[in-house]
Length: 94
Image (cartoon, rainbow, N blue to C red; front, side):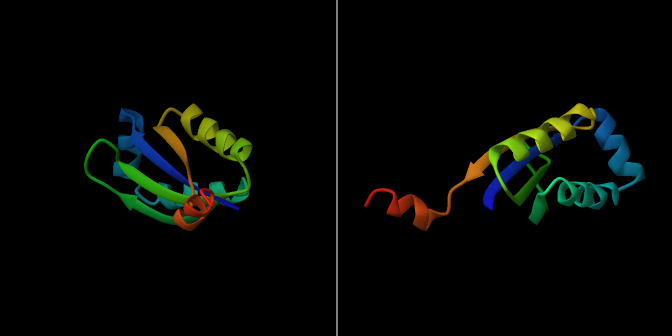
């Protein structure tokens, strides 16, 4: 499984949902698992993004589907990045 970082921002609709139903965040984690993605860690953050999620997924196609699914709901905008373990990155130069 590869590691991915999801940076997300709530839309106005998403902020309303979180305010009235904050456990919705954890419900989405279960939906990730149903799509083959494991949530490793999750943070609410200050700054240009509202949340940072570290996840493991089987491939880029699965992660693109997950991002499209989340974005299609209109409650969140997602940026997905592949994360390369630093040891793997360093060894690619050898």
